[in-house]
Length: 156
Image 1 (tube, helix red, strand yellow):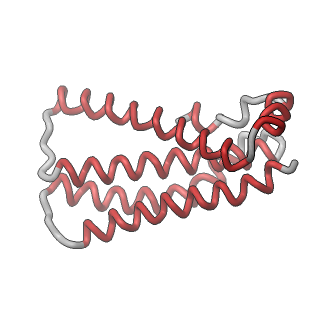
Image 2 (cartoon, rainbow, N blue to C red; image 1 turned 120 degrees about the horizontal axis):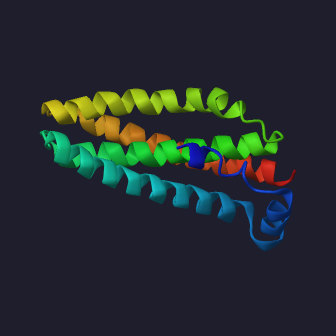
């Protein structure tokens, strides 16, 4: 997560100027979000396999748990990419990452913990589908927010 959070902070002004002449801001932020999401999903897969080998796979509804995990991972990657872009636009201030990221992560984390507990305990309710819909909506909203805000950061 530390690498994802510093994605824009590690890039020089020359590289950003090169990106500015090469592509549109939407393409750059989408590519960063997709790359960070894929890296995070790969890590999720590796850690899930390691967890299941060491402790056993004791999840009652694995499909539901997997969907919750994937949606949370995409949302978390989007949050860190957005916060990294904002921090880079504010003069590479590393302190902005936790300050701006926490309010965006808390709703994702609360819904994910509640849904994952239901999947692990085997509680089958329709509320799980509402939680999945809420996570998907939050992911779409965060991606839209990232694209919208990055257009203005791009101009600087």
